[in-house]
Amino acid sequence: MTRQVRPIVGLMLASAMFCAGGVAVVAAPAPQAHAVSMSEYQAKVSNHAKLKSQLVGVSSDLADTILQLADLNDNQIPAAVEAAESAQQAAEQAQSLAEATTQRLQAAQQDKANLEEQIKQTGSDYDDAKAAVAQLARESFHGSSTSDVLDFVTDSTTADDFVNKMQSQAAVTRSESNAATDAANELNTSMNRKDRLGAIEQKITQLKEQADQQAASAQQAASEASAKQTALQKLRDEGTVKREKLESQKSQLTTQSAKEAADIVSMKSQIDSWNNQYNNSNNAAVNPNNNQQQSRPNNNTNYNPAPAPAPAPAPTPNNNNSGGAGGMNYAVPGNCPAGSGYCYGHNTGNTVGGAAYPSRQCTLWAYLRRSQLSLPVGSYMGNGADWANTARGLGYLVNNTPHVGAAMVFARGQSVGGHWTADWQYGHVAVVERVNADGSVLISEGGTGFATFPAWETISNAGAYQYVHY
Image (tube, rainbow, N blue to C red; front, side, top):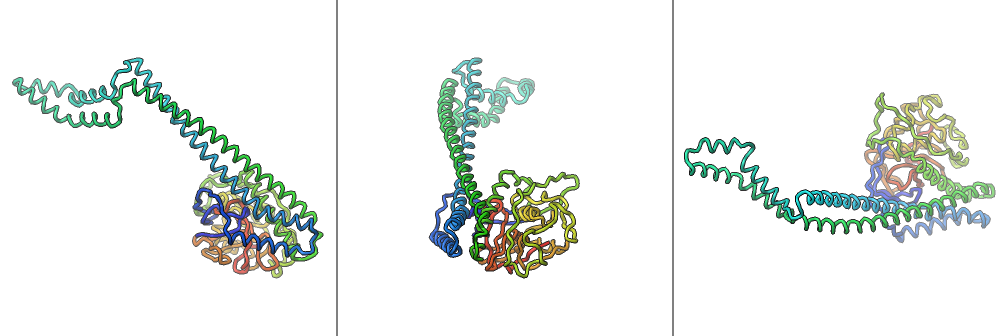
């Protein structure tokens, strides 16, 4: 399945995403330089123009803040993430190459030491290959014991009889001796020790030069990767400052279109912040077993659920959610403590926290985000497509109306806005972050098919999906 989505960094580094029991299996090629196509360029220009039209009448300072933050979200940070990941991969490859060459150098140096020791014992002109062949011939000729020769002597009545029997025995072993000689010539092991020592020393010189060059290249690549990461962090820090400035000035916005534009830009920036927090805390190592189905734990296994990202502010109240789920308070999405086994009058299914969901997968993010919003969520909701039915069985409210914090369920093989298709075996699950005025929803989602965890995108045909509420 090939899907074109808009992750938090704006670019996918993989061509397919399969979300299973939380598992997203991805076929990801090595990072390559990304050339912006004309259609992508036109889409960016169109999005920028649309955003500017929504900010008509807004003060120039506040409008600039929104536009600059949008550019960071959609262009600068995505490009910096791609550059940082590419540089990190190059650094790892350079380091691996340098280590392999160093190992070859060490092996050659050991060969030299061994040969020098042999020269001390039997001299530099000793031909090891010929000696080995001679020994093989002797062993083959004499057999496993001296009893064969003795038998010849005992059973022979004349000298001619003895010679004939010995010649017959030698013929049996001749092919083995010839094979050994051919092998020695093929491997050039018949070179005398002095020549071999010279060849080894020459190889050591070459390997040492390669190792020094590769070590320097690895160091340079590591420095470049560090610089790219520093540049990325600088952009993210800039985004945080602009997001905080925007939040403090939102009250100045008077039109619904401007408020919605500001909310979406701010939320995208917040999702990138969650991604950064998640990576920094190494929460991806939730389940070392990369199973393609979610399985129940062995009773003897000790599970340690990964902590959710740092709490984020509750989503801004949104009056465009008419027909929402049971009149929930949009400013405070839920009141279930993280890990609750019973909430809103039903069993949540939470028995081992998020430990049963594999790392970086869609189900893991849905679990973490729902827990963060104090909404009920189970430990064994199944593959992405299973969440709606599992939730109904546990007593959750499930319908086709989006709501902030709801788990958005993508059925197996379901077409999404005409631009990608949910996996035919596993489906997908995400979390609604905002319901927009035009009926579309902004979602956060996980999956290794995305460049970051979490990622984000806007889905237009929101009524076509099921939503797990509380």
